[in-house]
Image (spheres, rainbow, N blue to C red):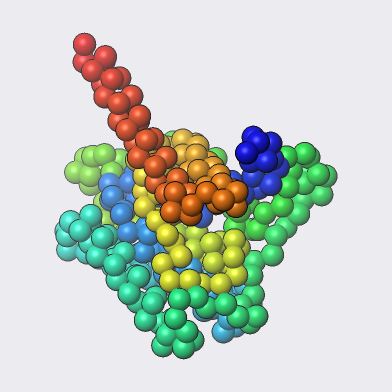
Length: 305
């Protein structure tokens, strides 16, 4: 197998296509993390967003309405985490795992109840999200087709990285959000409501994971399959941890995992067993976590010394 048959401009496009849903979900998890809420329910929120966007697109015949319905559904689903962890002070990790299981069961049930199909719902009535090609820039070799021929959600995901960096580190809103996550009691004494900011962060996270689900189901493919999130929400959680809730570093982590997924599919096309190629993103995730934990531990020991 020659390297040239694996690495080409089509691979770059595949990497970008794979990283967009992960990036959107990870940015949602990042906002929650900055507000002091560890959101491990990204997988379930993404799956709910994917199902609702496909259902909305099919029932309305409009991709934009499908996206909006997916966002609304994911936000409504994320309110379970908001109420449970913020208002009722439940353990967010336990609640998040339960939400992921609930999302898988509910979407599988509704797939049969609404569309009378099992496994995969694919219909000509589902309207996908069209790509928007930027003239001239899309003609740049290698990077042009990958970065300048995306869906609207793809452009939104990439633009959110610098926007979130500015909001978090250069605005009073970001300062208050980080204050709530780092020193909630101190923030409260200054008149900042931790409850309000944490609710807002979780709902915004739900909106972003809804967009991630819509991109996955209506942008990458035009269908819904049971458990089609396939661990992307969990990878997004790891991306947030690996990047230490920094937007630019989160983009880098999403690129790493998107590359692993794209290379896995390419190797599968060259005859490698699918069981091995599908495990590639998870192997990269574990290796990245191990290396990052060693790096942070070494730095901490050096600082203490």
